[in-house]
Length: 296
Image (cartoon, rainbow, N blue to C red; front, side):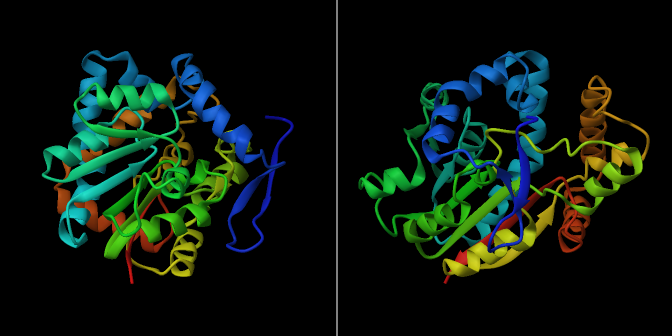
């Protein structure tokens, strides 16, 4: 990590990893190393929690179904012209499964063969490869999908704008493009760095190379003929740092902060939570952003 820093991207105003890994190195990392590091506890605590199974994993799956996944699915059900949806970077298939249970016709896409096999083992459709690779070789046809979802994956791709452009070509007219991912270098993160003397803990090499913002993603969408119509920010986890729960310096606090977030979201009505999170989106706050657009 000490060999990497970030620099401004040339066009969209977000930051990118410096030096930038090659596309081949990045694809190899996700195909061969990513899930190994997760299983060793080095990355993606939510995926590691799901991998461990048991009551903890079951409760996380239920919480995601009730909140994060429901927010995505309800937008797709209301605005997508049909039911055929692809999730790019589908991981173990939790969202794919929830979309199917909601009456959609989902397809999972992932670079990691282990992830694809895990999705298929649940009786779900999945393809191994990259979105642009599957489009270029004809596996996925132009204007063949009603929606494409990038769920915590766009920031990890070598060229986010190119991937959104590919998704736009795959979408039917009026199709919905959704991006959910980190809202990086946001104002609360920078306040925690400045007031607590923390490092920029969200910078994670070599996999996380693009540090996106609401405005950057929406500008990319505009450039590929997709008109944004929705944005919201999920719970701003950085608040815990500013309230005295330093889960960066004391990693054991991380699970407690996550559980408090879950308890908060379960204690308020869905529509109240959604109004609050839309307000976060307008203020460009929230650790995770969700943006939806429609192909014009």
